[in-house]
Length: 275
Ligand code: KIV
Ligand code: NA
Image (cartoon, rainbow, N blue to C red; front, top):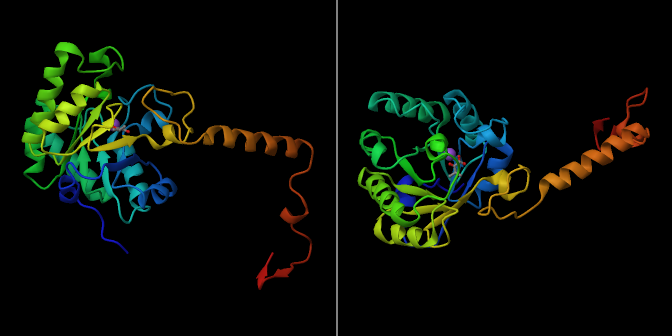
C-alpha cells in the first residue's frame, strides 16, 4: 500500500493544494478518513466529543495514548498526530519530552501537537531538535479557556500582533505546521503569507494552507455543539436517533427479532456455514 505521509511531506506542501485534515479517535473512523486526509489528528477534543467532559482540561495522557493506539490501527496513509493534553508539557522541557516520547512510542504517531506560541517556543525547539516533530496551535487555544474567559475569536484589532508573533515563534522553533484557530480572515491571510510552514485553519478562513474540523462535528454526531465555523456535511446524529427509535418500537411490538434473526432447534446450513 501507499507510503505514509511524513511531517516533511506536510512541510513541503506550503502554498500548494490545501491540506485536508480531520480528527479521529477510534479505529473505524480512522479507516474512513485515512484515504481522504493528509493529516489525522487524535485531538484532545476527544474529552468533550467522546467522554462528555465540559472542556479539554480533564483529558489525560492515558486517554490520548488509548485513542492514539485505536487510531493507529485504522491508518495506512495519513500522517497521524496526537495532541499533548493540558498539564503534560507546560511544566518543563524534560516533562514535555518525556511525555511526547511516551505518546510516540506507545501510539506509533509520527508527530505531536501542543498549544501555545511564544510561551511554548522553547519547548517546541527542545522537542523538534530531539526527534519529536511538532505541529503548533495558536489563536484560540482551548486549553487556555480559563485564561481567555471563554472560546472567543482571537487576534482582533490590537490583539493581531500577539497572534502573529505566536505563529512566527512556533515556526522559528521548528514546528512543521501550525493550527490557526478562530482568528479573523485578514489575520489568517497575513500569517499564512508571513510564516514559512503550512497554516491549518479551523474557523480561520480559506486563506490558510489547509483546514481541520472535528470529525464528529462535521458529521453531525456531536449534536449539542454548533459553532459558526463548523459546516455540517451530514446529520448522522439524526439518522442514528431515528434508527434507535425504530428499534425501540419494534422491540415493544415484538416485531424484532423476526424469523431471519432467530435460531431454531436444529442447526441449518446456509452457504456452507452453520446458522
Ligand atoms: O483537539 C482538537 O480536535 C484540535 C483541532 C480541532 C485543531 O485541536
Ligand atoms: Na486540541
